[in-house]
Length: 276
Image 1 (cartoon, rainbow, N blue to C red):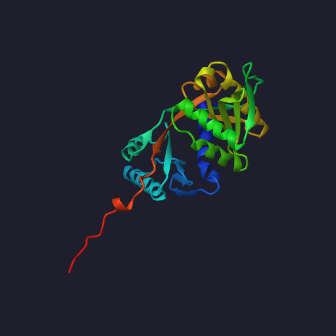
Image 2: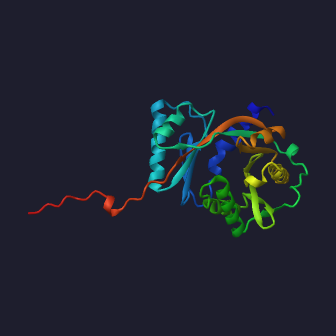
Image 3: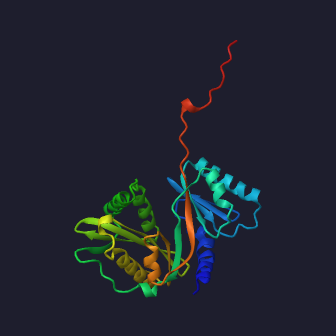
Protein backbone atom coordinates (compact mmCIF):
# COMPACT_ATOMS: atom_id res chain seq x y z
CA UNK A 1 0.00 0.00 0.00
CA UNK A 2 1.16 3.53 -0.75
CA UNK A 3 1.54 6.12 2.04
CA UNK A 4 -1.67 7.81 0.83
CA UNK A 5 -3.56 4.50 0.99
CA UNK A 6 -2.21 3.80 4.47
CA UNK A 7 -3.29 7.24 5.69
CA UNK A 8 -6.76 6.71 4.20
CA UNK A 9 -6.96 3.33 5.94
CA UNK A 10 -6.03 4.98 9.23
CA UNK A 11 -8.55 7.81 8.84
CA UNK A 12 -11.51 5.65 7.86
CA UNK A 13 -10.84 2.47 9.86
CA UNK A 14 -9.23 3.88 13.03
CA UNK A 15 -9.99 7.57 13.55
CA UNK A 16 -13.57 7.40 12.30
CA UNK A 17 -14.39 4.49 14.62
CA UNK A 18 -12.68 5.83 17.75
CA UNK A 19 -16.00 6.20 19.58
CA UNK A 20 -16.42 2.41 19.42
CA UNK A 21 -13.34 1.98 21.62
CA UNK A 22 -13.93 4.40 24.49
CA UNK A 23 -12.70 2.63 27.66
CA UNK A 24 -15.35 1.05 29.86
CA UNK A 25 -16.53 3.47 32.53
CA UNK A 26 -15.55 6.59 30.59
CA UNK A 27 -17.99 9.34 29.65
CA UNK A 28 -18.06 10.10 25.92
CA UNK A 29 -19.75 12.64 23.69
CA UNK A 30 -19.67 13.19 19.95
CA UNK A 31 -19.92 16.82 18.87
CA UNK A 32 -20.12 16.90 15.08
CA UNK A 33 -16.72 15.79 13.77
CA UNK A 34 -15.17 15.60 17.24
CA UNK A 35 -15.13 12.91 19.93
CA UNK A 36 -14.43 13.86 23.54
CA UNK A 37 -14.26 11.44 26.45
CA UNK A 38 -12.87 11.20 29.95
CA UNK A 39 -12.33 8.89 32.87
CA UNK A 40 -11.83 9.90 36.47
CA UNK A 41 -8.40 11.48 36.06
CA UNK A 42 -7.85 12.30 32.41
CA UNK A 43 -9.55 12.84 29.10
CA UNK A 44 -8.96 12.65 25.38
CA UNK A 45 -10.37 14.35 22.32
CA UNK A 46 -9.70 14.56 18.59
CA UNK A 47 -11.42 15.13 15.28
CA UNK A 48 -12.66 11.75 14.07
CA UNK A 49 -13.94 12.97 10.70
CA UNK A 50 -13.18 15.82 8.33
CA UNK A 51 -14.01 19.23 9.78
CA UNK A 52 -13.57 21.25 6.57
CA UNK A 53 -17.30 22.01 6.36
CA UNK A 54 -17.16 24.04 9.59
CA UNK A 55 -16.77 27.79 9.34
CA UNK A 56 -13.99 29.45 11.32
CA UNK A 57 -16.46 30.57 13.96
CA UNK A 58 -17.98 27.09 14.19
CA UNK A 59 -14.53 25.56 14.70
CA UNK A 60 -13.77 28.12 17.40
CA UNK A 61 -17.07 27.26 19.06
CA UNK A 62 -16.18 23.57 18.98
CA UNK A 63 -12.91 24.29 20.77
CA UNK A 64 -14.67 26.50 23.33
CA UNK A 65 -17.32 23.86 24.07
CA UNK A 66 -14.71 21.14 24.42
CA UNK A 67 -12.55 23.08 26.88
CA UNK A 68 -15.67 23.91 28.91
CA UNK A 69 -16.80 20.25 28.86
CA UNK A 70 -13.55 19.00 30.37
CA UNK A 71 -13.42 21.90 32.82
CA UNK A 72 -16.86 20.91 34.09
CA UNK A 73 -15.58 17.34 34.53
CA UNK A 74 -12.50 18.63 36.37
CA UNK A 75 -10.07 16.56 34.30
CA UNK A 76 -6.91 17.21 32.36
CA UNK A 77 -7.11 16.19 28.74
CA UNK A 78 -5.17 15.72 25.55
CA UNK A 79 -6.36 17.02 22.19
CA UNK A 80 -4.63 14.95 19.53
CA UNK A 81 -4.05 16.85 16.30
CA UNK A 82 -2.78 15.61 12.95
CA UNK A 83 -0.79 17.35 10.24
CA UNK A 84 -3.71 16.90 7.83
CA UNK A 85 -6.23 18.51 10.20
CA UNK A 86 -7.28 22.07 9.48
CA UNK A 87 -4.40 24.52 9.67
CA UNK A 88 -6.42 26.93 11.82
CA UNK A 89 -6.99 24.38 14.60
CA UNK A 90 -3.60 24.52 16.40
CA UNK A 91 -3.70 28.31 16.92
CA UNK A 92 -7.16 27.98 18.45
CA UNK A 93 -5.95 25.27 20.83
CA UNK A 94 -2.93 27.32 21.89
CA UNK A 95 -5.12 30.37 22.49
CA UNK A 96 -7.42 28.23 24.65
CA UNK A 97 -4.54 27.17 26.90
CA UNK A 98 -3.34 23.99 25.19
CA UNK A 99 0.37 23.26 25.44
CA UNK A 100 1.75 21.51 22.35
CA UNK A 101 3.88 18.43 22.85
CA UNK A 102 6.59 17.12 20.57
CA UNK A 103 5.72 16.50 16.93
CA UNK A 104 5.77 12.79 16.12
CA UNK A 105 5.67 11.04 12.77
CA UNK A 106 2.56 8.98 12.01
CA UNK A 107 4.07 5.74 10.72
CA UNK A 108 2.19 2.79 9.22
CA UNK A 109 3.04 -0.33 7.31
CA UNK A 110 2.74 -4.12 7.07
CA UNK A 111 3.52 -6.16 10.19
CA UNK A 112 4.89 -9.24 8.45
CA UNK A 113 8.31 -7.88 7.43
CA UNK A 114 8.91 -6.76 11.02
CA UNK A 115 7.99 -10.08 12.62
CA UNK A 116 11.47 -11.55 12.38
CA UNK A 117 13.18 -13.63 15.04
CA UNK A 118 15.20 -10.93 16.79
CA UNK A 119 16.83 -11.70 20.14
CA UNK A 120 17.44 -9.16 22.89
CA UNK A 121 21.12 -8.35 23.57
CA UNK A 122 23.13 -10.87 25.53
CA UNK A 123 22.56 -10.67 29.27
CA UNK A 124 19.07 -9.19 28.94
CA UNK A 125 15.68 -10.89 28.98
CA UNK A 126 12.24 -10.07 27.59
CA UNK A 127 8.90 -11.09 29.07
CA UNK A 128 5.24 -10.15 28.88
CA UNK A 129 3.83 -8.60 32.06
CA UNK A 130 0.47 -7.67 33.56
CA UNK A 131 1.01 -7.70 37.34
CA UNK A 132 0.65 -4.40 39.17
CA UNK A 133 4.25 -4.33 40.56
CA UNK A 134 5.59 -4.67 37.01
CA UNK A 135 3.36 -1.86 35.74
CA UNK A 136 4.53 0.39 38.56
CA UNK A 137 8.15 -0.48 37.73
CA UNK A 138 7.46 0.50 34.09
CA UNK A 139 6.04 3.83 35.24
CA UNK A 140 9.13 4.44 37.39
CA UNK A 141 11.41 3.64 34.45
CA UNK A 142 9.46 5.99 32.17
CA UNK A 143 9.68 8.72 34.83
CA UNK A 144 13.45 8.31 34.82
CA UNK A 145 13.66 8.38 31.02
CA UNK A 146 11.52 11.49 30.62
CA UNK A 147 12.47 13.34 33.79
CA UNK A 148 8.82 13.75 34.77
CA UNK A 149 6.21 12.01 36.89
CA UNK A 150 4.80 9.14 34.86
CA UNK A 151 3.18 7.35 37.80
CA UNK A 152 -0.17 7.66 36.01
CA UNK A 153 1.05 5.15 33.42
CA UNK A 154 0.60 2.19 35.79
CA UNK A 155 -3.12 2.92 36.08
CA UNK A 156 -3.46 3.56 32.35
CA UNK A 157 -1.84 0.26 31.42
CA UNK A 158 -3.85 -1.62 34.04
CA UNK A 159 -7.07 -0.20 32.57
CA UNK A 160 -6.08 -1.27 29.06
CA UNK A 161 -5.00 -4.75 30.13
CA UNK A 162 -8.27 -5.25 32.02
CA UNK A 163 -10.33 -4.05 29.05
CA UNK A 164 -10.50 -7.41 27.21
CA UNK A 165 -6.69 -7.61 27.18
CA UNK A 166 -6.51 -4.68 24.77
CA UNK A 167 -2.88 -3.98 25.71
CA UNK A 168 -0.10 -6.55 25.61
CA UNK A 169 2.86 -5.22 27.61
CA UNK A 170 6.47 -6.36 27.29
CA UNK A 171 9.56 -5.44 29.26
CA UNK A 172 13.26 -5.96 28.74
CA UNK A 173 15.22 -6.50 31.95
CA UNK A 174 18.79 -6.55 33.14
CA UNK A 175 18.46 -8.90 36.07
CA UNK A 176 15.47 -7.56 37.99
CA UNK A 177 15.76 -4.03 36.57
CA UNK A 178 13.37 -2.98 33.80
CA UNK A 179 15.43 -1.11 31.22
CA UNK A 180 12.81 -0.81 28.45
CA UNK A 181 9.09 -1.38 27.99
CA UNK A 182 6.64 -1.38 25.09
CA UNK A 183 3.10 -2.51 24.41
CA UNK A 184 0.90 -3.61 21.54
CA UNK A 185 -2.64 -2.18 21.35
CA UNK A 186 -4.79 -3.92 18.70
CA UNK A 187 -7.60 -1.85 17.20
CA UNK A 188 -10.64 -4.17 17.30
CA UNK A 189 -12.54 -4.54 14.04
CA UNK A 190 -9.64 -3.22 11.96
CA UNK A 191 -6.46 -4.68 10.47
CA UNK A 192 -4.43 -2.17 12.52
CA UNK A 193 -2.52 -2.60 15.79
CA UNK A 194 -0.59 0.16 17.50
CA UNK A 195 2.97 -0.01 18.78
CA UNK A 196 3.33 2.13 21.90
CA UNK A 197 6.10 2.77 24.39
CA UNK A 198 9.59 1.62 23.53
CA UNK A 199 11.38 4.02 25.87
CA UNK A 200 14.76 2.73 27.04
CA UNK A 201 17.12 3.85 29.79
CA UNK A 202 19.96 5.89 28.33
CA UNK A 203 22.70 3.40 29.26
CA UNK A 204 20.98 0.65 27.25
CA UNK A 205 20.21 2.49 24.01
CA UNK A 206 21.77 1.61 20.67
CA UNK A 207 21.97 -2.11 21.44
CA UNK A 208 18.96 -3.42 19.51
CA UNK A 209 16.40 -3.48 22.33
CA UNK A 210 13.85 -1.40 20.46
CA UNK A 211 14.15 -3.60 17.36
CA UNK A 212 13.61 -6.76 19.44
CA UNK A 213 10.49 -5.28 21.05
CA UNK A 214 9.13 -4.31 17.63
CA UNK A 215 9.67 -7.84 16.31
CA UNK A 216 7.97 -9.49 19.27
CA UNK A 217 4.92 -7.22 19.02
CA UNK A 218 4.73 -7.59 15.22
CA UNK A 219 4.55 -11.37 15.60
CA UNK A 220 1.80 -11.03 18.20
CA UNK A 221 -0.13 -8.59 15.99
CA UNK A 222 -0.15 -11.14 13.17
CA UNK A 223 -1.19 -13.90 15.56
CA UNK A 224 -4.12 -11.73 16.64
CA UNK A 225 -5.17 -11.03 13.03
CA UNK A 226 -3.78 -7.50 12.56
CA UNK A 227 -1.66 -7.07 9.45
CA UNK A 228 -0.88 -3.33 9.68
CA UNK A 229 1.17 -1.61 12.37
CA UNK A 230 0.79 2.00 13.45
CA UNK A 231 3.32 4.03 15.44
CA UNK A 232 3.50 7.62 16.64
CA UNK A 233 7.26 7.73 16.22
CA UNK A 234 9.81 10.02 17.81
CA UNK A 235 12.87 11.19 15.91
CA UNK A 236 14.79 8.36 17.60
CA UNK A 237 12.50 5.52 16.53
CA UNK A 238 11.31 6.82 13.15
CA UNK A 239 14.55 5.99 11.24
CA UNK A 240 14.53 2.44 12.65
CA UNK A 241 10.93 1.91 11.56
CA UNK A 242 11.61 3.34 8.10
CA UNK A 243 14.56 0.99 7.65
CA UNK A 244 12.22 -1.87 8.55
CA UNK A 245 9.82 -0.89 5.78
CA UNK A 246 7.19 1.25 7.48
CA UNK A 247 6.21 4.57 5.92
CA UNK A 248 5.75 8.06 7.33
CA UNK A 249 2.23 9.02 6.23
CA UNK A 250 1.78 12.18 8.29
CA UNK A 251 2.37 13.57 11.74
CA UNK A 252 0.68 14.26 15.04
CA UNK A 253 1.00 16.74 17.89
CA UNK A 254 -0.79 16.41 21.25
CA UNK A 255 -2.07 19.55 22.95
CA UNK A 256 -2.22 19.10 26.71
CA UNK A 257 -4.77 20.95 28.79
CA UNK A 258 -4.28 20.86 32.58
CA UNK A 259 -7.11 20.12 34.96
CA UNK A 260 -8.78 23.28 36.25
CA UNK A 261 -7.53 24.52 39.60
CA UNK A 262 -9.84 23.40 42.41
CA UNK A 263 -11.99 26.14 43.83
CA UNK A 264 -12.03 26.77 47.56
CA UNK A 265 -14.46 28.56 49.76
CA UNK A 266 -11.95 31.37 50.15
CA UNK A 267 -11.75 31.84 46.41
CA UNK A 268 -15.52 31.95 45.87
CA UNK A 269 -17.21 35.33 45.59
CA UNK A 270 -18.99 36.17 48.82
CA UNK A 271 -22.51 37.52 48.95
CA UNK A 272 -22.67 41.08 50.24
CA UNK A 273 -23.94 41.52 53.80
CA UNK A 274 -26.73 44.05 54.12
CA UNK A 275 -27.41 45.42 57.65
CA UNK A 276 -30.78 46.92 58.57
